[in-house]
Image 1 (cartoon, helix red, strand yellow):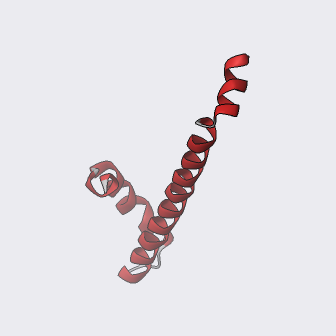
Image 2 (spheres, rainbow, N blue to C red):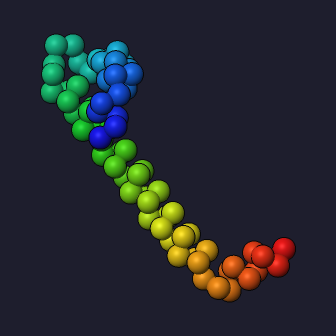
Length: 70
């Protein structure tokens, strides 16, 4: 949601996306927008799962003892 409200991101997309789209086709620009949204969602989901997994591992007492022993 913050990306939608950020004017710099919108301006960047409006300036860069048409260079990769066929002239006078709105559909190809929309397709690039959908691809960008899918890539961002995939990346942020993977990051969330990774951070959640590491959080669970770092709260384990064995890992805490090993980290504090160093």
